Image (cartoon, rainbow over all chains, first blue to last red; front, side, top):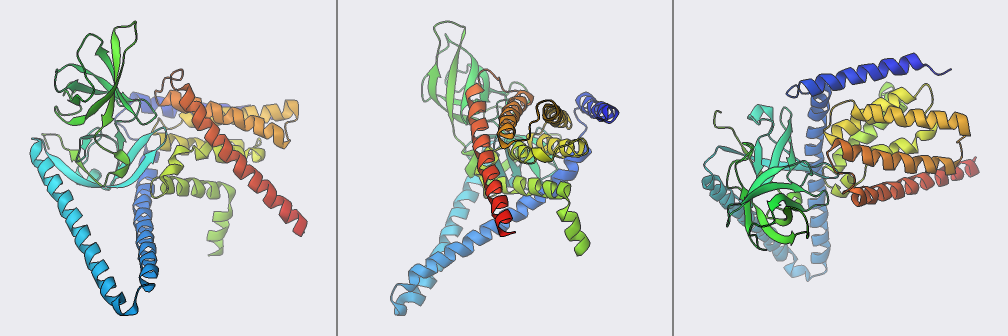
Length: 265
Length: 162
């Protein structure tokens, strides 16, 4: 005999939990915090382990190739390769830091650097960064990269945070055409592309125009670059046209980002 | 040590560990895994084990994981998995659904409805995103079939050995 009472009790408890969450948007679910604080450090460690394994594997492959070379030059080549790799790494690190510094000076709001430790590309497109509550990261804080806007902080944990990237369908960023100053609402189409909706079909827009954040909506600061117009779709009927944007930032190759801090902090 | 092994061998604990491992891997080196909804695949794979005693813990485990991964309100996916479990149990009673074929039919329904439900929770326009949802559902279903038949082969070899 099926125990209906048990099922109804479970459904009532779950509904109560959902109602409590819906009525208190700022209250974080204890379960989410508990799991996030366990899973995100695991992501960080796994990332480290896999990159170490990758480095070891690459070193091994390099070694096998070098062994086929003349034995006399082997040591020299090894040393030079190692030195070269170290210098290249230093050079690329220096270039990255230079770009970071330039970006840091470009915007007149407070920023905090963070490293990307995890990336997800499913229904929910997000990244995990190594800065959290302890570092002063706040929910909904905008996150920017070298090339432009990345997204906003969706969840914070003790030492890590999740960032919903602007590719998400529900991202809704207020943007404007930097040439004509006409604004619209931008979001992801769920398939990895960005488009601007509610862009009046009579307003001028051309392929190659640059879109930046408009500052409307109070979430993202004004003037952060989004990307260039790649395609314009306009129906014969309707008031608006769809403007597709090729994003400046490749969200899946991000290494460093900035979390924008509120001015009161 | 043995008690720890016993805990890990517990089916609920092992499912939780598998889901967490999958989440961690999909967020690190194996990004392609995040294109697959592993929770629903694992759920339909163990669908034959769902009965009056187990449906509640399974629904809670898979539902909470899906809620966490989707960043939605905790509990929404638990309700969805409860709904799936009830459908599975009652169709089993009424139509004697115990064959592999019927499980595959159930899995198609479960995967498609899960993807539609998830897209609704996340604010996707289901009509406009139908092709995308279908694409993801087909990928999920193919992966399910591969794992399902691998498991069937494995059990067949085991019985031959015996």
